[in-house]
Image 1 (cartoon, rainbow, N blue to C red):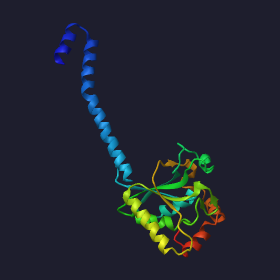
Image 2 (image 1 turned 30 degrees about the vertical axis):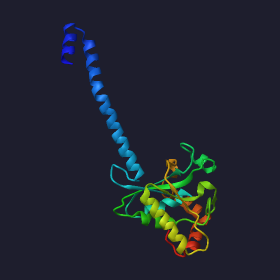
Image 3 (image 1 turned 180 degrees about the vertical axis):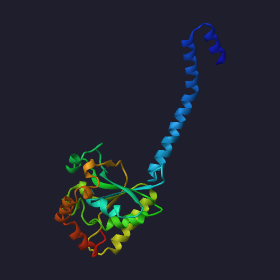
Length: 232
């Protein structure tokens, strides 16, 4: 490359010199660049498959239990839960809106995605909180809300979560304090779309409306009937 560069300079052809050097660098760096991108992609994919964020080694859990307004508070109370996000998952439409999801035509269900520190709170604990805040006996319905967009569902992010979710469901169905069968689904996590900003932390932003909705929907009354004690 030095000889080519010198030849170009002797001919006072600076543009050719720059072009030649650039091509030489590209021939060397482009494959390295591509390999770097592939390595990053594999790392991100593996982290996502494990339900773990590569940046801080936290984990992710996703649950659908009817109105996502009501599913944020019980998890927010737990030590070790870093954040809860209301959104839509389990459907076939890209970037669904609340209006589209509410129609029941996108296949999505309202859900909450939880980022947590597994050193402080276990996935088993999250499952326990989930079960005690839903009605696991009603398909395509949670309390007063009806439709597949309100179905209860556990979305696992890795094999360990799948095993724990299925085991907890089997144990609940065997030892449940109610007569009806458990119909809550356990499915592999799919793309999660965060809901519009006004839905996030709705119970904090609009406490009166939130309490009115929760009471009017009969959520707490039904939870007491199911579980016999207040864990929500």
